Length: 422
Image 1 (spheres, helix red, strand yellow):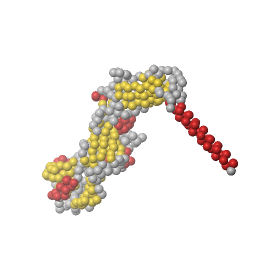
Image 2: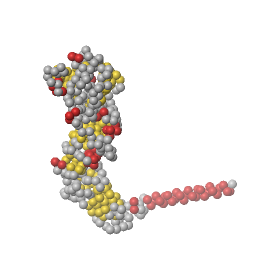
Image 3: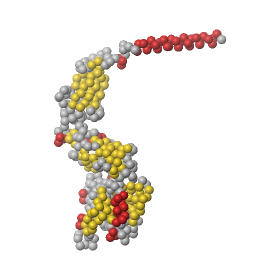
Image 4: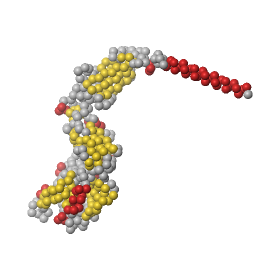
């Protein structure tokens, strides 16, 4: 019994000493004089560091890097944080001895920066210096602006985002600067990427179609950023649009039927006629570009001389456009006898007036129109509408400047291939 009491006494005594020690420590921490450098209030390091940026009304040249140096040989710079009013941080590099920091990326033009420099003196005491300065504006003729599409509104789930630049941008490094600054977000979020169509145009699409009833937001953070040479980003207007239901119209040229689905459920099956030999309808995914209640279609627009067997001059109603060169889904009352059994058109998808009216009123811009089992060529990815979805995801991403070694310069449009048809 005696041996069991001794350890218990020592345990209580030890706890009492621990409590007393903690109380003493707490008393010391209540003050500001514990002597640890991290607990000290930083002193004003205004005399310890120098900047090459302008102050007051003077504006810094965005072509020159920001440099900060330690004046005191016994002190050093420990950290630098620089950001502009848009929240963009300026990357930089600090020398091993803490004597110099310099920016490693160009300053933005027409921007206001706040720089926080942390230092320490020979005794290890911390200092802080905060500086604000502005950079000069880039000349108006040297500002790259972006026009986004589509216009605000509601679209089908196949609608790509477009970005038209005010000047051509060449070179992978310059294109990467632009592409990083073009921001696309959606609710719900999906994976997507930009693709350079040519030096002045980019398209953005998700890996798959947009979700139904989504909200898509597009903006640019390019303003003030150096793109290349003396070219800097300018202001651009942001765009927001929404998607409707997922509507897909699939025309099987081999069975002469169009199947229309809404959110995966078949809502109509329509007998149709597509392009006859020599005028075969293009295969692949197209996107509704617009709708025209009345269009006058002439054979001369597709190179058919007047007075020949294939010539025509017809009033056409309920015309839904899917290519810029003149491919439509439209009413074709003159070919009702062939609809569902033969392909007799000059490239368009024809159907009865009642069916064309229903289709016209059902679809919206951005909806998906796909053709399969035609003997025609594949729809071009770019230049004659939106054939973006005919590229695999891997090929699409190879048109981005942000995938190392992938940029292939886009897919330049061959104007000679853009023959109009009806």
